[in-house]
Image (cartoon, rainbow, N blue to C red):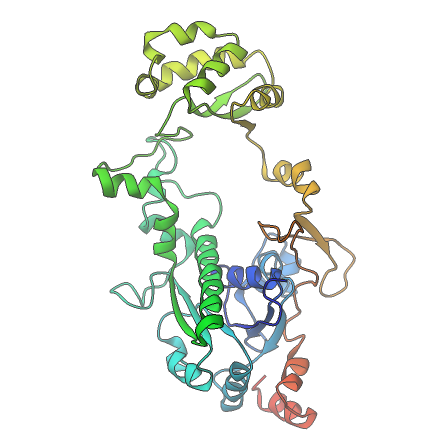
Length: 398
């Protein structure tokens, strides 16, 4: 594994931080999830299955914590803080996504922790970053989606602003954090220096918006919502077929010509409205109507095969269950089945890494932990005796 031998202390909750820790765990890091005794990560109570949430195994938690170990520590207790400091001395990375200032108030801020371990990579994930006038504001995915401008360019003019159908800002923040940690580990390998990483979900969201933000910054033209259309080209969007929807991205002249011939509308190539790429963008709605007349003759699945085989980018618009059932993902072993943490007889299916290493798929090999499941084990690894562990339990430190 790429991160074999790296120990990560994961003090994060809900999604952005846990997602970052999960990406590191997938690639072999020993991720020790530090949770509040008796409560744990808030995500343990989140998800579509009420019984799982009541059992502190919420679907939201199960999705982002496979392969991690759980150590409960009360950081408001002197012994709990002392245990964290001891763990920091033995660790490579610390992830946290508290509001800025919370770790300092607990007495375990970055300066304290990096004095304990100058080689520590301290990664703080927050909505807006550790500095600036918004630093102390609470931030959830929807807040960041709105503030970043994402919602203003999603949907059609009639329904915008519209939230993306999944917590994209959280996920992007988590991916940015995992990348930052990996980069910092490379520098530490060369120099021996630790790092302080300040990850902003807002900035990650704006970075990911790519051409939407860059077109405004460079040309001064504000973007607008265009539904399923691609503002850079036409025909490039979502089209009706005989039985469903098909995405087509015929961005090049050759692709457009091939598309017209295959759908039986070769005459469109001689239509002055569609002669030049700029003309096609100016008349995109008329072009859509003409293309859909040809597409009405076959199903989305049939057109996908015909067009893709001819070099025209095209694919069906699928539901999430259908997407997860694609043979492509099965062939690459992307979805893995794990045992349930508490042994109950039902499948736990989780996603693996989005990239392979040396041709091999990467996925979690152990289920998510029960709350505090590894507390005794982790403390023993840090040198605590059974008697000391019992005493810590009695005082509520763990």
